[in-house]
Image 1 (cartoon, rainbow, N blue to C red):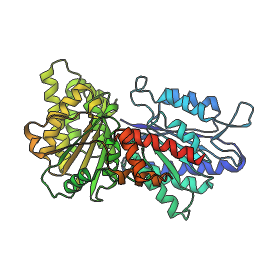
Image 2: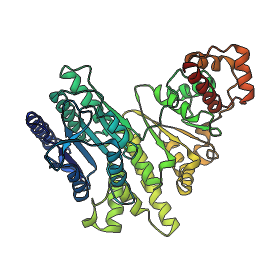
Image 3: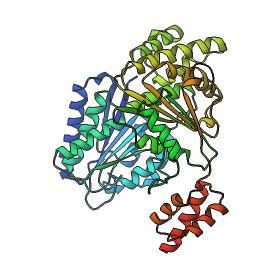
Image 4: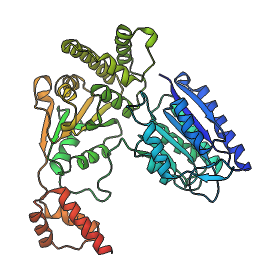
Length: 452
């Protein structure tokens, strides 16, 4: 299915028109020359007014929205109002707009990425990111040519079939290659787990970290790690540590299963997107065959791949549905096995996954992992599947307990400016029963009181 890029430009001053024309021209040229040019349509709306934005969104239903606006002295994207006066678009207005157009209940393929290629737009990016998976914003005033360099690099990478995350990095590299090492855009990835602790990692999960290192370094034959713990015991923090310390030779894909409303279609799509893989020949061929069988060739390509998979799995007969899912899983893992690197799939909040997805993960999915020597999986949740069948001997199981080590919490207290002695730390651990989230919450409140 083609993805639409809606380019919205403001002509707020005479000296900016040339910048906007150059930016649009270079993006068009990059997409025209790209390997996957047939997968993108660039739609332009120039000299737009605030009310034109919503109208364009309704008419075009884009997947990528690119705002381009420059105006010195104003912090944010600026467009001309009905009277020809430069008008700043508030973050509240942008948040409301994208809440509407990112709703999957209203749009088959909603807005997935927003680029704010203007000045001082970080606040606006954060507002939009409440509803859109990927938002790129500028953290400081950009010279016109710098914003253009980023845009060209970003869309060149998308046109080459790369993921949004990879395209963002290419855009940043293009800016640096142009001689600007200071003013770089920021990408807000709302699909990634939020960093719960921006400070030192607590030295409290030595055993689990050792298990992880042994697994990714292939020092053991187990390739499936189950991480089980009640809420607030640091599962997500530990998974973040795992992902951060993956060897460079290993590609990782993190999927939060509580977001998997469509079940297996979401899981397939998210793994593929996170790995930045465009070509999965066996998997793509299998989908085409099932789509042709159910919808006919003329309807192929009218939906995103996630929705195509959802459609072909929408079968009343359970045996038929199980057969289709099994065949898709085999094709998907065949393609992963053919990749020239090892792959780590991190699945969080297993307990929140839809029942049908949880059952498939506990059965066919992990069975395919067991048969794929280059694929490793970490599966975490308040509950995890009972080891069984083909994958049982390939798994390790760890339960996260309370953190009772005084040294771990004393290091954390010092990092946030609390000068507690060991007895005070020990008392806090005893009162709060060593539960990580409660201790962190209490210590952070006390640290703020000290700062005040």
